[in-house]
Length: 165
Image (cartoon, rainbow, N blue to C red):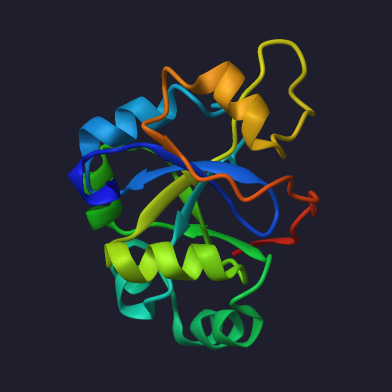
């Protein structure tokens, strides 16, 4: 579904995330309605293919080696993006977050899609500190905005380390 413009929700190793293919501008626009624009870490690029990551993120050799040592895992790397990132996604940000979750479902989705996936958490109107950790709550609040919700049961939230580069 992701390769046909869908926005889906699924559990990662730290929370439930909404996701779409980064290069699908229509899907990205839909995804942006779900995220907290004030949070610089709220949009995350997920891929397990370092060659895809190199196309969208500026990864000098020392950073590349550091990332390979830390990933996959909960770490988030905030780095400058390439011009291609802005061109394919339509997103105008100075930096982007990159991660490779250690969860098998994320690996399977990434392998099936073979594209960089854009992830975001869900925003709340009143309580911005809340984390979406239950698929039933996502269904109740966001079913009109999500094409598919993969129910992996409740997720125990982990605050991931963020490395700014």
